[in-house]
Image (cartoon, rainbow, N blue to C red; front, side, top):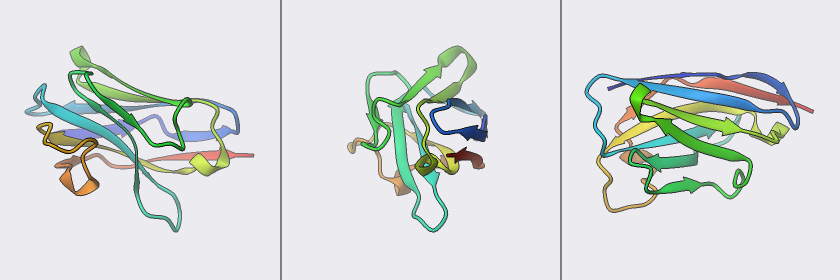
Length: 125
């Protein structure tokens, strides 16, 4: 499975961006897709996750009500719609996929099997 992330860029505070992550290769409906981010000097953190079936979603408290994760099954693509951005959202954003739902929700970072390259989001005040 290959993941291709895109959509990052520079935006002013209170602006919006939509990140995309296109999956290719042998991809199954029982995958979990996640968006992580890593800000300078900080550890990578899970921002949002979704079961490919759409039956479960997760959002970090810091993004609840501002970010929305969704997927287009026909395109094998997962999105992260980000609104009301703040400078604290500045980070490199990564998409990741876990093969199989597993017993933990959301899956821990080390449980993801595939990673896309990062896409940089910069929010200026």
